[in-house]
Every structure is written in structure tokens, then in C-alpha cells.
Amino acid sequence: MSDDEPAREPIEEDARIDALEKRLAAAQQREEQRNRPKASGSDANYRSGNRVLADLLGGILGGAVIGYAIGYFTGTNPWGLLVGLFLGIVVAFRNIIRAANQRPDE
Image 1: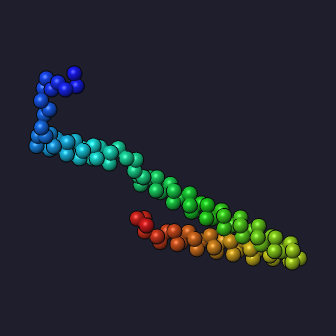
Image 2: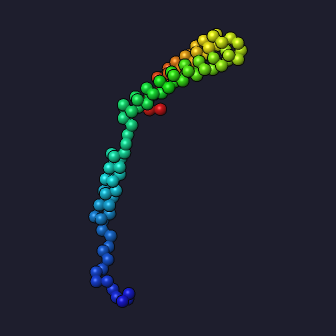
Image 3: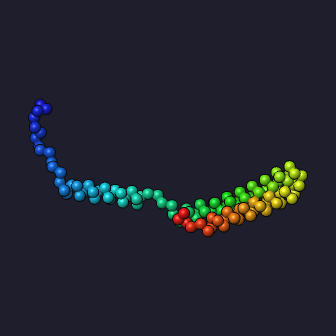
């Protein structure tokens, strides 16, 4: 039975089928690009706002904790806390200014 020829002859490649396959692949690629999730402007603004908040809180709280620890161990507690808090605020604002001057596409 395996020696018998099939009832139909196999169809040879057709230029129309090749063109249709290329068009189908291009359409699928366009559809994938269209359905891909993109970061919208509001998402980018939300992320930059969260970064500013984290820099501000982290700088102030980190400076206060480190300043208090240095003041506690050196015996100059209120001044160590104030200097650490001031340095934390300076670092926080420096980070915020650097983030604000950065281009959005970077």
C-alpha cells in the first residue's frame, strides 16, 4: 500500500501563497506591536513622583538617623542630629535636582 501513489498530486509552491504568508507575518508583527503594553506618560510621571518622594524621605530620615547615631556615640547629641539632618536634606535636594534635569528618554 505504501507503494501506491496518492490520489492527488502535491501542489507546487505558488507565488501567491508566498506573498500571502509574508503579508500574514507582517500583519502579525504589527498586531504584536500594537498590543504590546507601553508605559504611558502618566505612568512615567507617577514613577518620577515616587522617586522624588523616596529621595526626599530617604535623605531626611537617613540623615537624621546617621546624625543621631554619630551624636550619641560622640556625646554631642543635638548637634550631631542637626548636622546629619541638614546634610540629609542637602543630599535629598541634590538628588531631586539631578533627577529633574535628566532627559525623559534616558
